[in-house]
Length: 444
Ligand SMILES: Nc1ncnc2c1ncn2[C@@H]1O[C@H](COP(=O)(O)OP(=O)(O)O)[C@@H](O)[C@H]1O
Ligand SMILES: [Mg+2]
Image (cartoon, rainbow, N blue to C red):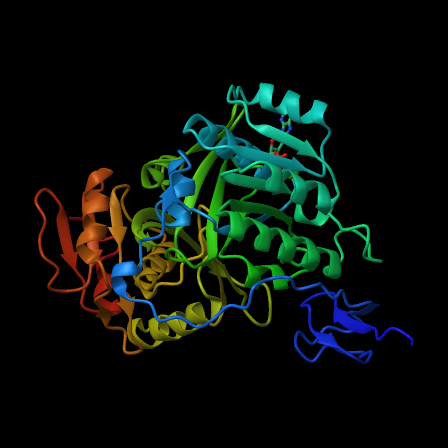
């Protein structure tokens, strides 16, 4: 009897018994590849439903990775037995970061296996030397899934790092390494094996030009935590962002500095970002933003000038462009200054995308500062949401933001009304945009 084949979408993993031109799940065209379904012999005992009580439920056990920013994004350390996907562009520092984690955990008494399907043992050794890592953790250079399974079942490891998931394959399947089917096979088998052994697992995954982890969106569903390592390769810092976390908050970000000796956690990101600012010009303001559990002071920049186009440009990096459109309308309506003949560009420095509405006030302040051609003061920060009638509204965690500003030496904060005063800090209450417009550039 002819074997029944199945068709699997290369992008999202949707399975169908018939070939389709367009995937009904991810809407991609011509993404279906045919392959033979793998039927696994199921020798496992049948599991029965159970009722659990709070007393029996122990807290998840975590180990600290010894890298403060990594622990932060994982939610105070790595949960034992969890599967983590670390994605990022080539050359961003994924291997470097995982070497650090392997070394720190080994020093802390865990047994670590580093599987590399991309570099030779010689390359790995010279990298380890270059990074100045002394800890002795095990290396396995292979592309075969079975080698890894054999190694992790023979020896009990605390952590297994797979660099990268696209480089590992099962030769028994008629598909190329890195294809959807192979990645699905590799990740499913490794996650099953490591979960049963209480071994933590980190997959390194490459990111495609479109910015998704190559091939398998499906991988994101299977792991407990998805982290993206981002940053401009020309700049000295990198951002580790949580996309999904079954064991912690998702808005958390970790900031690292890339030095010649490897990655270093930035313990004081506010100071780090503000110190990169130099002398301020028109259109620059500071915003104490909350990412996950921590406040970070960021710089918000704006330029507005007469347009050369028939329709003026509005561009924004780090701030939602639709919100910018609304904000500009509100400024036009409440302040009475027209922007129909002006381009407006907004940029949040540091590469952090801010989703909270509290950034409205610093954006408005920067736009108006550029419009009036006056600076806003070196040690001045702003926060508050702006409503459609131009009123400045309260936001969450205002005390925390003021404390963070004070900690890094900011002297003056513009914020919504009725915010509690803080010693040594000048708090300026702003009721609405019109008031803000008149305050900007006014001599004290
Ligand atoms: N042998 C080396 N000498 C100097 N710098 C290196 C060397 N290998 C890698 N780097 C630098 O370290 C950075 C991170 O590289 P790596 O951790 O290999 O990235 P990824 O694993 O994400 O592709 C790169 O920007 C690269 O320039
Ligand atoms: Mg690498």
